[in-house]
Length: 88
Image 1 (tube, rainbow, N blue to C red):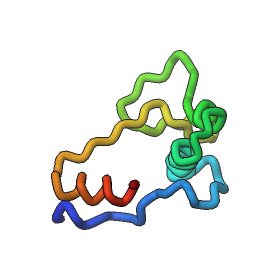
Image 2: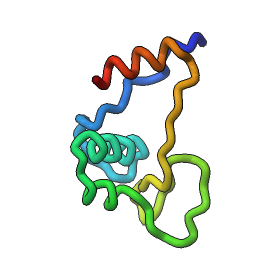
Image 3: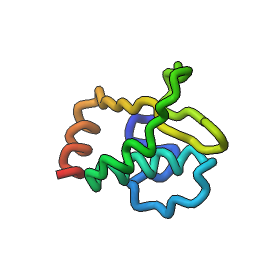
Image 4: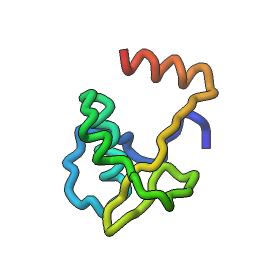
């Protein structure tokens, strides 16, 4: 698979966030909080339990997915440029 191919549609934060039991709902909520600069929504999205220890950006607590960490990096210069232009 080339770096320009995608596996699924990108998550934008504009999705209807229905079932909080779905991982994509947590990611969509995270994106919505970032785009909207909504600190309260970000706090709601993050997991605050003391037993969280996971590298994956999503973790499931009480039938609801919560973000425990989110990190992204783009090491392909062309993809980075395209991303930077898209968010400007």
